[in-house]
Length: 244
Image 1 (cartoon, rainbow, N blue to C red):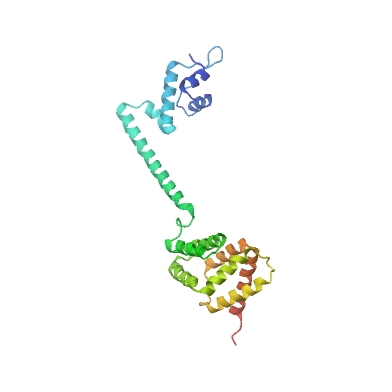
Image 2 (image 1 turned 90 degrees about the horizontal axis):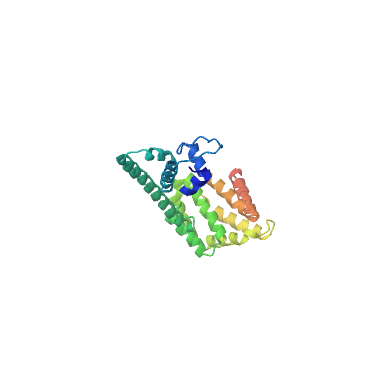
């Protein structure tokens, strides 16, 4: 007869594992003997080894009891079913690994290739990775909240980077990220950006996602917060100004 410690050692598991198998009903717990100890038979050791072997093979504990008492044909069918479930899990993990491998830039997974090309173009122009990430976030928001405008925005963005003045302003904003928000250079930059906004003004409407984009940009830099705030105020004044 075996103590619980000897039983566990025989099967290559811990005493805690044996007690867990008692708790879930896989292994019967013997009564205590006259000395107050629980003693296990050789059959208990065999059963425990079978349980451990099935568990190590990936069989869910909830199915082990049925397998222990199954006829050969039932056992084979159950094992085939469990193997199929494991294969599905392997396929899911392989797909997860493939998707994780695409996260090298975090862009190709969620954005169209045309947008990824724009982000790469920004890098090629010398725009910082911090600003590129903000641009990426803006595209993610646009795709989620206003997807129908994506094709036109892609065309507009590429056209903008074909324009030397647009590119200059992007680079100027990028350099201003660490400026003090009261730096006088920001006044000139705000004027230049406002002039660009007036020249490229559309119908005056403001898509909802732009509010989130502006908030995301403002969070990144006190200087950029001042720029965004000043441009929003100027645009609002123009919108509400009485007609001459």
